[in-house]
Structure formats: C-alpha cells, structure tokens
Length: 488
Image 1 (cartoon, rainbow, N blue to C red):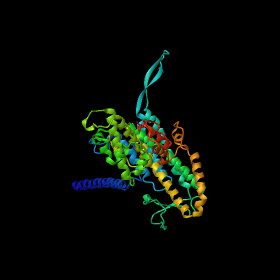
Image 2: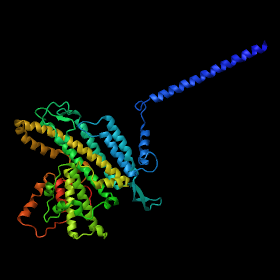
Image 3: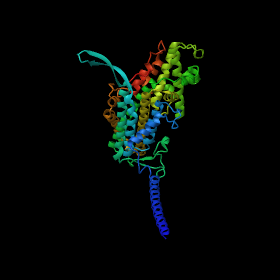
Image 4: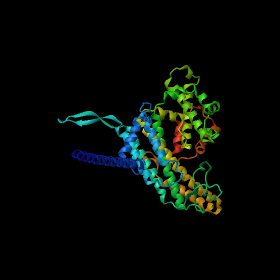
C-alpha cells in the first residue's frame, strides 16, 4: 500500500512538471509567433530608415562600384558618384511638366542626399605653401592642405545656382493667372500648346491673356533662369574640357576630318569665305537626332585636326596634304560651329565625346562637378521651357484678339526693356567680374554677321585667312557672356 501511494504521488508530481513545461513551451511559441507576425506585418513606412542607415547604404553602394555581388566588377568611384548624382536628380525632379513648387519632402531629400554626395569633395585636397612661426620667432614655410582649387570655386557656385532654381519654382506657388489641365480634360480643340510638348499638361490662361504685371514678372523669371542655364553650361563645358580624351574614343576616329564630316559639310567649312550662321542655316537640323549627329561629327573633326597640329605623332594613317595653317583655320571654324550649336540647342543629349569622357574619367572631383552642373543645366532648361509654354499660350490669346494685340504691341517692348534692366546678370549670380554687354550686342547671328557679308560682296580681303579666335570673339559678343575659364 505504501509503495502504491508513493508511486501515485511521484506520478502526480511528474504530471505537474510536464504540465508546467508544456505551458512554458506554449508561452514561448506564442511569443515567437507574435514577434514574427509583427515583423512580417511591418512596412517600410511604419519603420523608416534613419539618416545614418540611409547614408551607410548609399556609401556602401558607392564603395562597391554598383556591383552588389562584391566581385570587383563594379565601375570606378568617379563614375559611381556621377551616376549617384544623376539618379538622385532623376528621382527627385523627374520630368517637370508644370511650374509649381517642389514638395517639402522632395526638397528635404534633395538637400540631404546632395550634402552626403558633396561631402566627398571636402576631402579632395591639394598641398599649398604656408607660413608658420616657430617658438623661437623664426618663420618657416610649410605645406598645408586645402580643398582643391576647382572644387573650392565651383561647388559654392553650383550650390547657389541650385538654390536659385528651387527658389524660382517656389515663386510659382501663388500664381493664379495660369493653370494646367490634362489632355483628356481639355475641351478646346485649338492648338494651345507647342507640338513638341504634346505629352505635357496643357497650359491655360484667361481669355484676355495674362495681365501686364504677370507677363513682365514671367519675363523676369525667364531671364533669371536663362542666366542660371548659361552659368551651368559654362561650368559643365569647362569641366568637360579638363577631362582627358579617352584613348578608346581616339582609336574610333576616322583618318581625317573629311571622313568625319562628310564631303558636303567638309566643303562648306573649307570654303574661302566662311559664315558660321549661314552654314547652320543650310544644314538640316529639323530633328534632335540630326543636330546631335552634326555635333558628333564636328567634335570628332576638331579632335582630329588638333592632334595633327599639336601632337605630330607621325602616323601614316593621320598624314594629310593639308597645310598647318589651313588645318588651324578649319579647326577654328569647327569650334565656332560647335559653340553655336551648344547655344542654340542647350537641351541636347550628351555627345559621343562627352559620354566617353564621363565613362572613362577617374577624377572624382571632376566627376562630381560635371554631374552636378549637368543636372542643374537640365533642370534650368526644363524650367525655362515651362515658362516659354505659358508665354506661348498667352501669345495665342493675343493673336486671336486683334484689339488686344494692338494694345500690347508697345507694352511688349517696355516689358523687354524692364526685364533686361531688372534681371540679374550671370556675373551677379556667380560673382564673376564680367562686364555685361547684353544691351550692346545683337542676339541674331544673321544680323551680327551682316557686316561680314557686306564686306564680302563689296571687296574681298587680300588675305582670306582670319586671325586666330576671330570667330570665337564674334561668338562671345553674340552671347553676351564668356566662360569663367579658358576652354582650350
């Protein structure tokens, strides 16, 4: 009896222990399941990454050269940073179809992530001599580090242009005299938009057009953005000129300039009396592809002629019967045509030479300057196009109303004069000491070169070879602005 009772008590204790153990296991399983469900149910919006985590992710991708496998097949650090700036601008700005302020979230993201990428330039330094006074009072010359000179000058300027563009977009937040409607909601069948912008929202203005104050304000904004565009283009062109031409691009060039340009273009450039504006008027530039093709041909011929003039490598494939003086003249004319193409078509895609330079460049500082100036140039051109869309819609209302057109004929001249006098110049934006000659120089190439045509028809000069940089000087007068640094 005692043995049976003892076994019963032991069995009862074992049952209690098993029940307690099973309850503890069930409790742990329930907790684990709840934690798993909580983790699975969480979305990125509920648990956003901190700034530190985001920055670690960005720079990890940069260090890997966009090769997330870690196999060492990534791009260079310079190209990775260039792509990072380009992709950030594309995701933040996109293709702006309206004149409206940026969303606060996008603006904050743009400034934050650009600061991360630009922080790399703070550590790109150069050695400069400096004076140091020792304890015994003697002066010693030592070498100290400071930010590289091109970055020290251009990064603050690009930041200022960036701020000006965003402030310009913010200025359109209270605009009430024009608005946008989608293509489907547009009930009017008249062509109220330019044909090359058919995918953008349609701009609408009041039946009587914009008021004089609004039109004058728009012209001022247009001139302001145009100056930002010129500054960004100047910086981008200067930076690209500093990047070495890759050997892969040189190896792909034809043997001579004639083969690059084609017979018809070559004959037009090598005539005895050359007019760059007349040359462009005879070319078929009806599509963007044709303009880009001409730009690629011109750039290739310039590289060929420069190599023949300066390097004299003696390769038989580069030999030619053209004299050095004529080759220098042809290169000068091609440079002039290239400048005019860049000014008349600022929104062109990158040329073959530019793409090759960007892909093969290994200088991180130049890569950041090039990409930053390029996206600001693209944004400025987009904002300028949207302003022109509004002015175009307003102009249609004026032409459809003859009485209003007569009333506004004189006011347009006053608006142009006021906008030219009130709008800050490029030197005001960038702090360059450049005398503005906008009011004294014509804006039409045909008008500017009219004097040359008159001299040609009256009496040809005894020596047809012009002085060096004569066409480039004309181009500088034409544009009213000169690049802050030489573009040799």
